[in-house]
Length: 473
Image 1 (cartoon, one colour):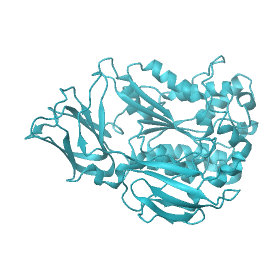
Image 2 (cartoon, rainbow, N blue to C red; image 1 turned 180 degrees about the horizontal axis):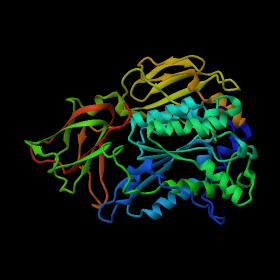
Image 3 (tube, one colour; image 1 turned 45 degrees about the horizontal axis):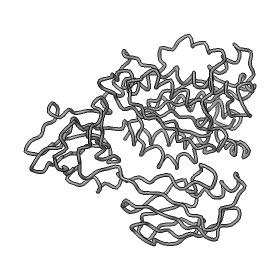
Image 4 (cartoon, one colour; image 1 turned 180 degrees about the vertical axis):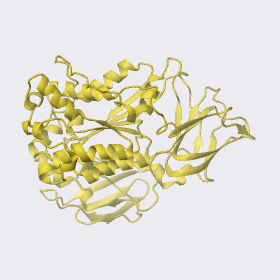
C-alpha cells in the first residue's frame, strides 16, 4: 500500500465503524523472538522506568496514547493496553486511543492539534499511512511540544510482492515504484533516529512469521489492508516486544526532560513564597495531604498569570459528521489570544457534495463573530477563530458516508484551559497516587520563573514541583 494515498473509499467506510472491535483472543502460534533484541525498547525508557519502578506505596502516573488511523483503531491496541496493566499493576495508567479511521498523516497532522499535544502523553504508539512530510511534522511537533516518547510502527505485510521488495537503502529512491521500500527502510528508520524514537520493525518480523507458519499475507487480513483477529494478535505481540524495561540502558537522552523538585528539599517556602527557576513548557504541582484550610495561592510565571500565555489554551476536537467519528473541521486556529468559551458554527446553504457552504460563527462569550464560506479563508471579527478552506472536512465525509448533512447542522468545539491562575490544594484521597494540578502547559519552551504566593494564613499543601522540557526546540 502506498503511503502517499488514502485507502479505498470502501475501506474508509469500514475503518470508520466496524474496525473498532474488542481485543481478540490469542489462539495462534507465538512468533519466535528475533535473534538480537538487545536494542528493543531503548527509545522509550523514561516511560518503561516509570512503569517498572511504580510500587504499591508510590504509583507513578503514566499516560499512553495510541494514535493513527483505522489500523490503530483495531483490537490489537486493547491487547497491548491490557498487557501493560497486567505487567505493571502498581502504575497508575491512563491509556487512550484517539485514532481516526481513514485519516492519513495529511489529515492527522491537523487533528493532532486537539487530540495529541494537549493530552501530553508519556508515550505515543503511532502507526499511520500518508505523506512522509506530514508524518515527520507530527513526530517533530510532538517532540517540540511534549516530552512524549514515541514508538513508531512500520508497515505490516499486505501483499505477496512485499517478500521481494528492495531493502538495500543505497538502491531505494522515493518514487511511486519504490514507495513502500522508501518508507519502511529509509524514511521511518531515519526519522526515528533523528528524533530519538523507538522503531518497531514489525514488517521484518511479519515476513518471518508468515514464512515460518506457511501463511500468506491474506491469512492475517480481513481485506487488503486491515487485520483479522490473527493479525491483531500478531501486531500486539510485536509492539509488546518493544515495551521492555532496561535498567542498564543509558539515561542521558531522557533523564532531565522531566524534573521533580521536592518542596522542603529542592525548593522551600520563604516568607509565604515558593519560587523556582525552571526550564520547559509545562509546570505541575503535586499536592501533599493537608488540612484543606489554606486559602488558594496565586501563581505567577515570569511575573504573569498563566492565563496570559496564549499557548496555554486548547481547542477540543470539533463535532463529528453525523453517524461517524470524523470531525467536520480538522482543526480551528486563531490569530488573537483566546478566552475560555464554547464556539458554534451554524451551517447554511450546504451543497449536496459538501464542497460549498455558508456559515456564521458565534462564541459563548465573544458573541456573533462573523460569517463566511467554506471556499475561502475565514478570520472572525475577534480573530479568535481562523478556518482555512482545507480544514473543512464536509466534502470528504459526504463522499465516503454517502449521506448529506441535515438542515441546520451545527459544528461545535470548546476552548479549554491548560492552566490555573490560583492553586487550591485538592483533596488527596490516595497518598500512593500522585494528585497533580497542571499550573501551565503550552508555555514557550525555555527558561521561566515560577512563584506561588500564599496568603497570610497558611501555605497550601504542595509536595513537589514537576517541570517538563520537550527535547526539540
